[in-house]
Amino acid sequence: MTNVSDKRWHDLLRNAASGQAVDLDGIPLPAMPDPAIQLRTVGQSGPGAMDEAWAFASQCLKRFQTSALFAGKRKVLLDFGTGWGRIARCFLRDFLAEDMIGAEIDGDLISICRTTFSGPRFLPCGPMPPLDLPDASVDFVTGYSVFSHLSEAACRAWTDEFARVLKPGGMAALTTRGRWFFDYAASLPPNDPYSRALSSMFSDFGDAKARYDRGEFVHSNAPGVTGGGVLDGGFYGETFISERFAREVLGNGSVSLFEFDAAADHPILFFEKAALRR
Image 1 (cartoon, helix red, strand yellow):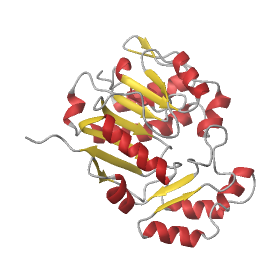
Image 2: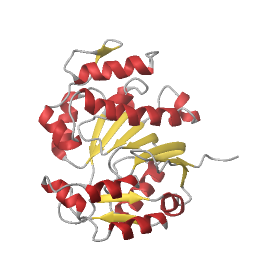
Image 3: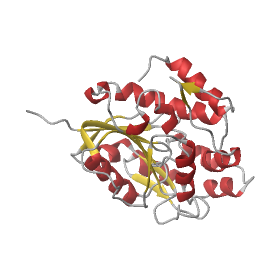
């Protein structure tokens, strides 16, 4: 919605994350939550947290701009699993704040978003659909570090839900675990409870990788890798979505996987809802 370059926008996001008062076209950027909350939810705080967020958002914007829907002044973005709004704030340059929606399962994080943001609508959601949104009411969906944790049933259900709420020609960008993460997790020293849990989440990492390479959906809800609290093991853990599974199962005719780089540090599944044909 403004002519601010990518580099300048990234700098503004970093400055705001460091505690500076920053505005875009006279509108202040949202305040950051307490650093402890940032660390607990995303593992980083301050500018580093926003660097990671912008790396994802900038890739999304490159793909979203190929959709005819992006050219519209009024286009709706749904940030699924918005947390404290880390990803959402990256899109305030390109979307009107009142056209942005954040969906989140943690009520405390929704409260933070409603306090720090001005304009976006923040919706509570459960482990499974539906969202309180009409059919074909959303142009674009983002989900960072959400489908890297959901169970197969939850992944299927939420992909179907995005197909319902997306307009024809709309796109969704969802991250998952990369294949490299199998070896990384297996090699972790048991220095803390989470590292111990990751290093033992599969009894046989070789078998897990083989299943992934065959195109299967690979998920672990072993003790310690569930999120705790509202993120229970019934739907939450560590998830690796293969390209074949994304294309053949999640791309179920309503949405189609059109890009996926399994070798990326944080692979993004890009889906597109079929446009209406004359």
